[in-house]
View 1 (tube, rainbow, N blue to C red):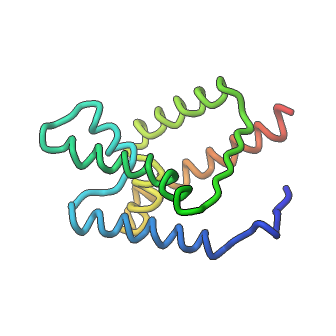
View 2 (cartoon, one colour):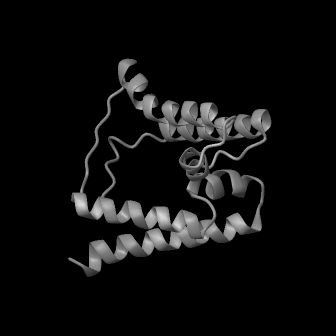
View 3 (cartoon, helix red, strand yellow):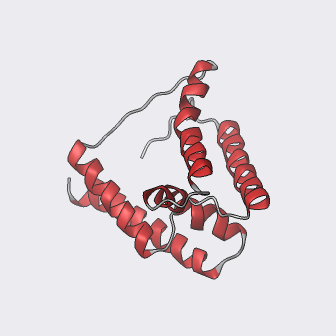
Length: 143
């Protein structure tokens, strides 16, 4: 593994973490809801009349954030190191995992851990272990 120390920027990572924490905190304080992306997006697949507008605005905000960042002068470099089939399979596996785990990384890892939820601790440990194992297998076993 190689870390590009010239491009390493802990301040932007810290700022991003603070913004995510602030947004999740405000979301639960103002709406009484957990900012779990899979639940928000899933609610659009089986919509209830009063739930659709805020869910659409939340998803639109996530999709527009990189556009606004780039318009403000930020640089975006996207490098995909996997083929289309691998990305589709990975997306399906993540979707399946969020259904079985009753939540996603944002719901359990950000919001659940901050509330000291035992279920979220177990879920976060499981998806982190699965991620570590997947990277190891793909990079060192399937070479």
